[in-house]
Structures are given as C-alpha cells and as structure tokens.
Image (tube, rainbow, N blue to C red; front, top):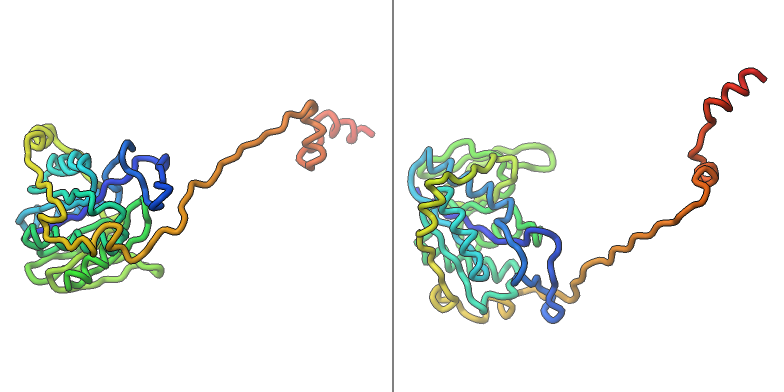
Length: 266
C-alpha cells in the first residue's frame, strides 16, 4: 500500500513578519518547524505501514530550507520525500496550494491513502486537505481521531464532531486529515538520523511538475489579503504610595485580625 503525507513548514513562534505589499507571511530568516498537526499525520502513516506494509512518501511546498524538515521525516522512517520549491509558488492561498500539491502527488505516482494534519498553525483554515481531495477526485474524511481498520479497498475511521465521535467508512484511494488525539508522534532513532543525513530529496520546480503559472502562487490564488497586521501590545502600570488605600477603594481589603478582635471586645 502506498501512503502520501502532505506536510508544511510553519514559523516556530508568533514573531512572524508580514509583507506590506502582498500581505502574505514572510518566511525567509524565520526559524521554522514541522506543522504540529502534520506530525500526527506522519506518525499515523508510519503506524499504518507497520500493519498494512507498503511505502510512505512525504510531499511539501516551500522555500529550499524546508528540505531539512523533510530530512527529519526520513529519519523517522519515511521512504521518500519531495519538495515543491519555486518562486512561482510564493503567495499561494489554499486553493493554489492544493493545485500544486495535486501535481506533486501525481508526479509521485499517486497514493492509496493521503494523510494531512487537520490544519496548519500559521493559517488555521483547514481547507487544503479537502480541496486537494476534491481536485484529485477522491473521497475525504476530516478530523479523524482514530483509524479503526484499513484494507486494500476501504478505510474505517472515527472522526471528531461537535456532538462526539462518528464512525465513517470510505473506499480507497482516499484522503484523511487527522487531529492531535489520534496518536503520540515518535522521536527519530540514531540510525534513522544517520540514514537520513545522506538521503536524497527530490526538489521540483513549477515547470518540472507541469504547473500552469496562472493557477499557482499569487497569480493562481482565488483570494487576496486586503490588509494584514500584528496587533499592538501596550502594557501600563501605576505606582501607588499607599497600596492599602487603593485596595480599600476597590473593595478588596477586608478587616484585619486586630480590627476583628477589637470589635469582639467592644
């Protein structure tokens, strides 16, 4: 069975910069990590491979530095990794991103099961997974909290809903997005790290995956960011010469033990 995990590199903190012209996130020069939700998708693919056999490919779109993130996935046990990296991909919204990932998935030969985290922490849209499935013409199940069973023809899962859990089955090939309660991601082994150090990662440009420049990146985005900014954070304090007077005015100061004793003897 062939598994494909689509992953994303996101800023490691909220100290991100916004491009004043495009309104998109500026990723150069910012420490980045694997999207936390995608870590659960990778772990689930590894667990499913242990049961069903087969291979795992990891696919991402981003700047060249994202190759190191993919190398970390190879250290965990992923068999192959590919990175879509090209200036033409810059500024992509969720639709343009899904279009590029579809072409990347096709170049990898497709998969029986695609896995993604429910959302990326830098966007919180949860749209790329369902959009990718729609573009590929395959069924998808969102917010999967448990894979009950997997066969060559069908996957049975439990998905998280507002009212509890729902058990859903669908035929393969299919796509699922997972929530964090599905598993606990593993750490790489020393042998895995050494193996991944010299492993090759496929780096593909927009031309190499046959992308139409008008359907990817900023040009192919169906949405535009009108304005984006970081909220200003202001902190103020006041110095009081008599903290007791302030507390009494606020009604936060009760009687002292001496005052209560004095009232008792009165």
